[in-house]
Image (cartoon, rainbow, N blue to C red):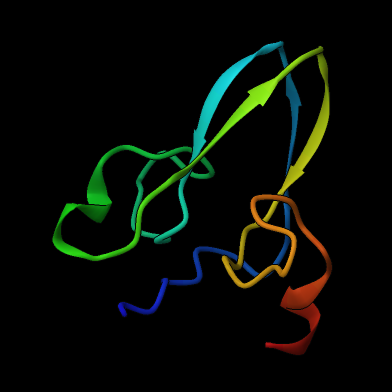
Length: 78
């Protein structure tokens, strides 16, 4: 399995609107934290999330969270 890249060792805190989101799990997207299709040459796929309401989301930036796609603080131990 391909290893994800680490675009940043901190969460992406984004005020989101209710919608469907594809979170980049490979770390290669130039549109972090969202998927832009850069995973095509890997076996890693995005995680699609349905946000039911407008809210602040802390997306995992290191791609190593145990609670993907959300930050769980795993970046502190990298």
